[in-house]
Image (cartoon, rainbow, N blue to C red; front, side, top):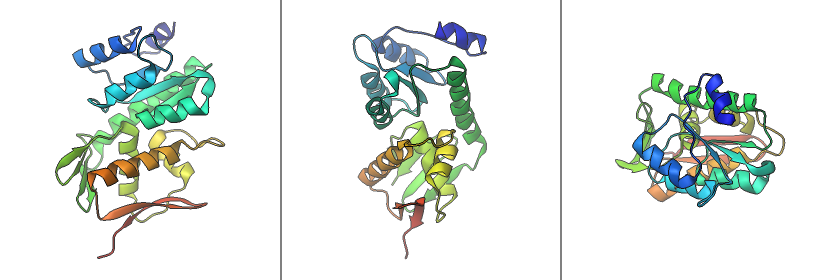
Length: 213
């Protein structure tokens, strides 16, 4: 039913019934975006997402059971770019899909290269390199890094960063952006990125501080 609705909304939709089928289908022809349910037969949605992230950075929107925090946080940690709790309005899902696709397409028209220290973000390729070695980031992690790089030294509130990177207003008790920034820090640290630090300012937000010479 959801596939039929999204088709009527103008999307080209391919539906599969399991995580294994999804991974096989994506290897054959990668889509622009994946809508992924957590409750699947065989490997569940989170396991499917983890396997997908080993090979692809394409945007993923998770559908989570009853909006439980543990499902939402687990999805973000596994690399989801956005989430929608059940039950949901199909109109909202269509709007979320358009917002994620718009951010992905808009990135190709921006500056070709951003960077600091030994890190480079190639906008059109959607690729992050540290010392010339690729760092696997999700589409949303890339967008957060892009926003921070474009506004180096400027404190961004959690609301601003959520709006700019995730494409929706910050909701009450929503800690998604904190989870995403934490993951981004760990990945960049593990890759050996140097020359700047993503700092949190309690009550204010986040800032990318360049290291002093």
